[in-house]
Length: 197
Ligand code: GLN
Image (cartoon, rainbow, N blue to C red; front, side, top):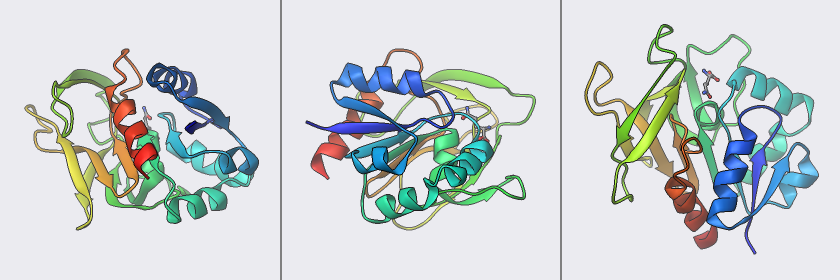
């Protein structure tokens, strides 16, 4: 069977476990390298990316994560998890450390400090119907490398056209939180990616 881990040192771990279980895979919380080793794929949740980076280093998970991702482990990052997968971060803290792997530049808290959260329907490549996207102090993708496929852009408003979902090989990331709201389609497409990897 397919085992998908959720990075569990910080962030909204339970919501991702529930969404993955709804899709029907075996789940595992990942806090240690031994747990990471058992995963066919990994989700990095929303939360606080600076803290995630610090804890990943302290728990000896940062280099194992970089190794697994470099050797092709499918990984899906949401919000802070997107920041963790980004090769380049704007408006990060001075000591911000990411895992990297995705050839993107993200801007933290990009929608403005006053905009804590907003939500709405979002058209996403590969999904027949729009997804209900929940953004919470979200990053956007400022720019992407040649090998990155853009899966979704904000439609309307001041952030119109901003990139909020991407894929590059076995890596996927969204600025928003598909784990919130009971729609498991984005998780299902990640599970499909894991199974085909
Ligand atoms: N603003 C957070 C960060 O920079 C991300 C917010 C979230 O994951 N909901 O890490």
